[in-house]
Length: 167
Image (tube, rainbow, N blue to C red):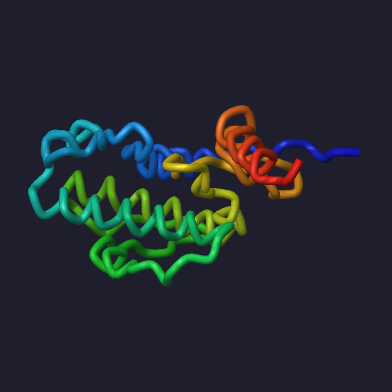
């Protein structure tokens, strides 16, 4: 009997959206400059330094998610040190930053930290489909989902594997 699907934790939803603010397959990026970052974060403004930090953070989170189901190089997470937070009670965290954009970016690192503490981070993955690299939440009961969509990327991979076999 199959178990119930795992629901994406509310605190991890913004992290997933942030990681997917860049669509590799489509070649689009929602974070094109500091103004776009501010708009995406829902804050009044962001500096050029915060924009660069956001890109570093997104790269680090994508690399960590990729490592959840495929061998990956050790990600560079030094940007986490520039987004400080403190542990409060249990698995609760509070950002120490005061600038709104930096505070919002820190909330994303807190989402990652909470997911790690809850043992949920390994379910946030990057699709290995050809040129896809879309981040997705593995909602399968056993945590064995591989593709962002079985109908699209999974089907493409199976069709290629079938075509490659001798008939």
